[in-house]
Every structure is written in structure tokens, then in C-alpha cells.
Length: 203
Image: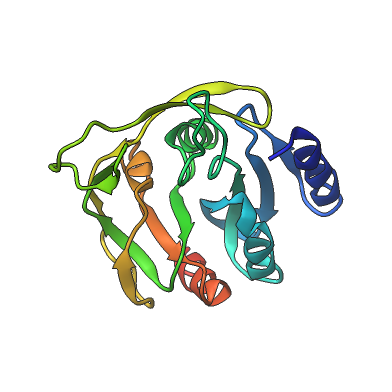
């Protein structure tokens, strides 16, 4: 993603909500709900920005929602290959800065992602942690010019299910939240507005 396009999007979004771009090129936007409630970080691939914004539009909830639009999927690296999915470092940075009560990672499909068995990306592709092959170590180039290291190895995680949604496997980045003590779930892009209504309605 080009830096110019990122800041053009920031300017457009800032006309409606409070927003900023951090060092990793993540565009973060704040949505204020009713009094009380938790702070929820909703983390979405940048290409799903419109889907996420439409789902949040007009949604009634208590507390605060911070939407993080992550440009790392597909980002170039110094090694000459593009990332096949999101990176750990931008998410870890947002969690450390904003300290949300819950984290929802948007993913393909429908329902609530509650577990991930662990995996790594190797030269041969994605495999289980116990399978042969070393994880790739890549140096990712953010739209802001920042270069950061990403080891493509992700531990297993499992969450206590929340009521009201069908359950499915979660995304590999879920461990980033759980490592920091933040309850973390995947949230499917299909019927996203209904899913957000269900989970944000829990307070």
C-alpha cells in the first residue's frame, strides 16, 4: 500500500471519527458507544475496511470500539516476497498502546473463532508446528517506511466460547492477544454486523 493512499484515507475518515495512523501504517479509528462497557479492539485487514465500517455504522453498544485497519497482509519484504497474511508486530504494538479489554480479529467465513492449533510458514508453505521446515524470517516494509522483523511462527491458542454465535477455528494471530492477557477471538466477515451486535452486546 502506498503512503499517499494511506494518508488520503486517513483524511477522509477523520471527517467522521477520530482517527490516526501509527508507525506501522495501521489506520486506527475510534467509535464511542454508551456509557460504561469495555474497550474492544477490532482488527481488520486493510482491504476489508469498507466491510468493517459498514458493519459498525449505526451499531448500538456500550463502551468504546477501536477499529484497526492493518496494511501488513500483502506487504513487501526485504527478502522479495509479500506477506501471505497479517504480521504480529503491528498488532502487538496496538495492544501495548491501547490496552483493550477484548480483541476481535476479522477473518474469512462466519461465526466466532475460538481456537488455533499452531502453525508456521516455511519455504514450502503453511504447515503445523511439528512438521519439517524452518519458519520464514522476513523483514516487512510498512507504508510509513518502517522496516520490522517477522518470524512466521504462531503458537496454538484456545478461548472460552461466547454465547450466540456458531464456533469455528480462529486466526493464527490470536496468540498475540492471549500472550498479553487480552481475551481474543476471530470474527467472521460473513454477517459481520450481526456478529458484532452479538459480541458487543455482552458489554
